[in-house]
Length: 397
Image (cartoon, rainbow, N blue to C red; front, side, top):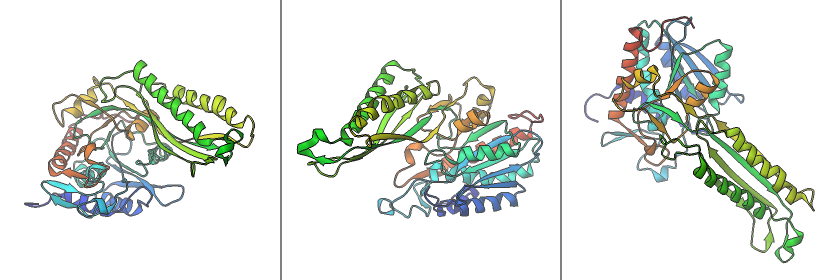
């Protein structure tokens, strides 16, 4: 790139070089961030996962006796196959005004900007604290955020507001859907296909579940609830994996189905799950085990996270919009950890970060230099507004 590289871009290069694909450890990245933040005067708390292969990091800059602003990002990234990329996915490449690399958009660009901004937050002697939260395993179901919330509660820390820096093109997002994902395992009885009535076909019973899920999705699309602020303005149901059988003349004894639904924040997710469990437990399982007690189906919820719903008229939303672009707040199609923070930690939250979700989770992921510059200005604006006593009221927590 022409000219001197920004501090944010330099840090981004280092962050991308840590392969924090969700099945790998994030400890090297967490240690890198901790070292930089402590050098800026932050007080850091490191919370390891149960298997100690990963960790959440929570850092505080400024006074600890009052609520402040939390800037949050996840450290993990989705897998990258180098064969699909023009360059090494874990080495940042600069082309045409863009930084290419896995996680540049989702969401190491934001983390890099926050780490670059940390010394400025510290030097400003802010009247309220800035908290920096880095989590693990967001990409596999927002698994790290609940653990972080439990740890923060034990330390009696209560932020007043949160910015989650997922890629929104630096627009303020005030809503997203939740998600719940499930695995259904069908246990049938194998047999020769010429004697199919004497066996129990796991694939056929699994197909019955998929049919019910498809009909549920159509009903929700027709009946709502609806929110026209979303690209898809209703709760969706989706079957993603269906695997069973070995060959056509064998009645299959096993079948596995993975599916999800993504409810609007105002939808009753518990009622939807209860309906699905009712079909499985009251209809499908008894049908499978009627003549063969060893046959049946198990249904496991793999993960779930709540949606986000902030009032567009909230003065805090307007205050943050004023720091980015003079455009209306938006609702986004993808899930984030903001729903966890608002619903479980009682911290109002928005989503705003550099890059675009359409450029993430694909080969040659990138974030543009312009987006990183906008994020740097956003964080500088936050610093100045906090210094002036705006954004976060200067009251004890």
